[in-house]
Length: 435
Picture (cartoon, rainbow, N blue to C red):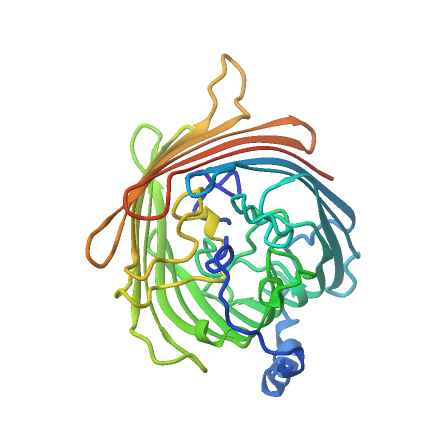
């Protein structure tokens, strides 16, 4: 899918347990763990050596930033007698300090208001309507200190936006009005022209339902999580090995460990044609206080062709399930995966097979550069265990700029159920202005 829009590609956007919250009782804030002393001591030893790299990567532009996003979302779900209509406005304002000796500071606040609230926001009590996870809220979105002594090293501490690879496991869920952010330490270092090492410690995740949500397990999760990634050039592509050790102290039953490998590559063919390919495998099992569970596998194989800005992809993704448990990615940007109707934010117990095809590119114009982008995708869903046919889905999107900093989006999803959930259609109209 096109990477030009954050919500379409298998590189951006929702949350595995986000719209189907668990009923477990959260722990109290007094039980949260501080940053491990060993980790702090390790950083104290590493940072002086990291500073030897020469600075070449341009720092983000300092000063004030403003992002306004106006959206109308219509949901027709056959499980409900009423359609949902969500009219919301998200405002995000931030300030980034100038860089001094590699150090900088970022503070960013955001708030969402609803001017048409005929929808279940998860906190307004309107459960007769389908759910749209954009409740009214106001919160500190990011508050961080960044240290970048050179082009090879970056250390970020505080509340921040995190995204790993294509966000299939760790992402910021940028499609929702209130994005997901983490209270975390993130360290990245590139070894000369060689591999890149990344480590993140996650202490808390601020979820898309808003930090002031009355249900604390929807507002945030207390974590004790370690993410490790090592990537480098292999042949025409990049090979990445990763480990995610995630203890969810608010919902202990969801704690888990992922171990995986991902390879992405691209190249050129004759007559201006290009190709791209992705292969990924991961294994998930229990971790920390989670009870023993059956292991689950994740598998992705995707290939595509490109020409003059147009891209066609064919892919197959499997999240394993044994009828009781299934492979889950609760910290991912899930709206980018398995269709925009969001019927599979939580993997069914029998797992999920998703065979998909997408085509997209610039909207053709006569004699002028095309700035509008379109995307069309089809998904066929089935069960990993038992082979049941879950249903199918069409997705379509058109995005185009209007003026400097102002963009628009029309987006549609149509899910047709066989044995899973109910028929659902969704329509989005959006304007966004960034400064």
